[in-house]
Length: 488
Image (cartoon, rainbow, N blue to C red; front, side, top):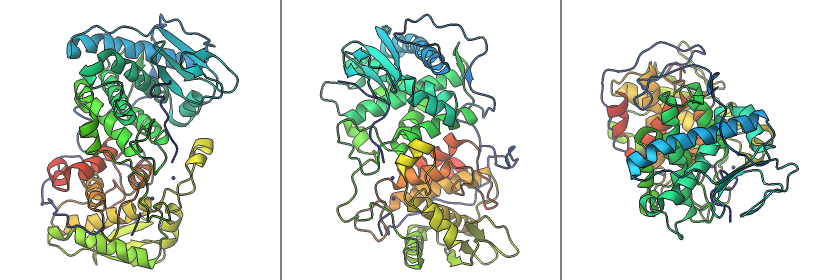
């Protein structure tokens, strides 16, 4: 049986939550700068988990050595070169880390297999690879195999050369689990979701090591390079509505990026501490509710905008300031003020102006099959549109309490507050309820170059995807109080 292929299931959500969200906002000074990046975006409000924000081309180092590894069926292609280097590199990482953190030596993999899902029929102890678009670890023969014909070229072409590295680092994470056994809470009956979360987390630990320039093979920038990784993990998420208890479940994009970031920020010991109990307490992957006939997607109209407004008013009433009205003026602009269509916060009259037509386009259901085939889905889902509106509403709340709204900290604080509102929208029985897949729709929007979710009032967003996702995640998992303490 294949253990932990990098891909689980495929996915394309909001049901009409009202809960009290006690805002922890205060009028604080900002720690971040106000300069803009080359694309008009703002740099992060600090660093990336203690590392500086860096910009350079990520991938194999020009002087990278040739890996001393035997690989069955390799063809010398660019994708094989990247994959083999990633395996050699990650094994070096674990040779250093495993004795230090777990008191045992790392034993190298027994075999490696490269194949093309288009044509090859190679056999492993886990079965044939015929037509298998995946990468996987096979326990019976202690091997890692990868598809150089479809999967790795597609990821490289869309996201860059670090996409292959995260896939192979994930698979090596499964091999590490088998070596650690109970030291990593791994037993025969350990649920798939635990193994997959750990493997993503172990991959994050490896990438931290690369980002610290300890690798002989790879270099990764903490801006564009990590953006490639975040985008790759988003694509290989499970289908919305998948149950976390299902055999083979890997997690939503929210879950997978969370695990990777934990490994990057805290290291492999924290990954090994993941178990069924603590993962169950925070995992977001779940089936659609029985009454969710639209599979999480609502029609964007005046009625649902009214429900959204009530949800936001109730969620942010703890701030003690008037929430903005949401108005439709045709193009989502602010006459005489700053416009950031399709939604703008108009400070002069404390309103959020929206372009309903453009937001409807954004709110079209996600087509995950189209994402795989062409790299594009017509829409990002209704929660992407709701998050854009919520981000501009949060601007009004922040202005009301005297917080800054025109720099990088304001953008990250906004993403954090959108996450906190999303958490308030996950309470059963409430008016506007988060549906399966909604958080992934928010992440999809966060990763797009025109997203407002992590943007300041002028529409300038923090350019690092790692920070943007982290801010949303902190708000969702740690409540709104962290939005002020973390982002000023």
